[in-house]
Length: 310
Image 1 (cartoon, rainbow, N blue to C red):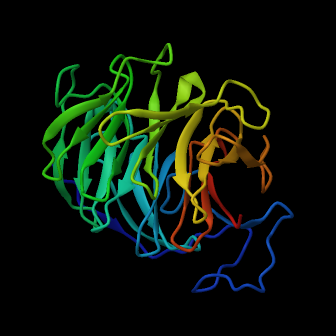
Image 2 (image 1 turned 90 degrees about the horizontal axis):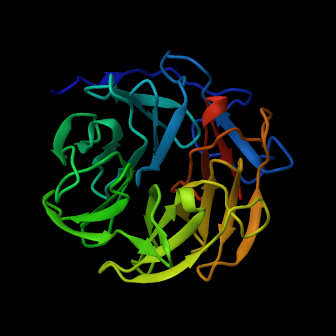
């Protein structure tokens, strides 16, 4: 089933007036914590959000956000609404992950339908893979997708499978990379897949409150993290992104904050606290670096995206 894309040109920018391009160096942050802008509000109108849960940056400079209404909306770097489309089915549940291929295609972890859907940049469905089950080429609640430099596709899933699988550029199943205990603990809701500059795969073992670094052949290279709120500790990490400085940005859903780590596991800094004001977060599901070097934070329970200049 192909659902026609919906298109609109309404500009949505709350509490700040954005220009047509990126803010200049002379523009001061809105808050002492470095928030440069915010867009979205609670609602079902174009540009609004109903519990946004994932975000992906496009090489062209736009960002895409998916929410619990089953919509994927595309925004400019400064929060202007460009367009979007709806998922073909939503009664069973809504997506929790998406990523953009270098060629512009959008891969959506259609979580509760146990599949990954592939769209072109305009929102036309051009592919799909996976079905419900525990065998090869099957999923149980896929959470996120990543693509390596050679075009191979990696998918994380949970709800019993709790594993990462590898797929060809042609969407054919190849192998299971990560499953079973790691350092004595079974994976529990792996998510937040991202490749670093060395083409090793990082993911958040969310319910074990730790991060794992994996080779493309499935070798465990690094693990670190434990439950807590202190520096170096984690509380339900849901998404990862690589900074321009090649450090690791972690979004903690249960900690209402962002935290940056070195590849060796040293905590470099944290940002955010619980609340409703600018610079505060409530149940953030995801954060990513955009092509302009700013950070886009899916502030889920506040139904908005905050833009941070690190």
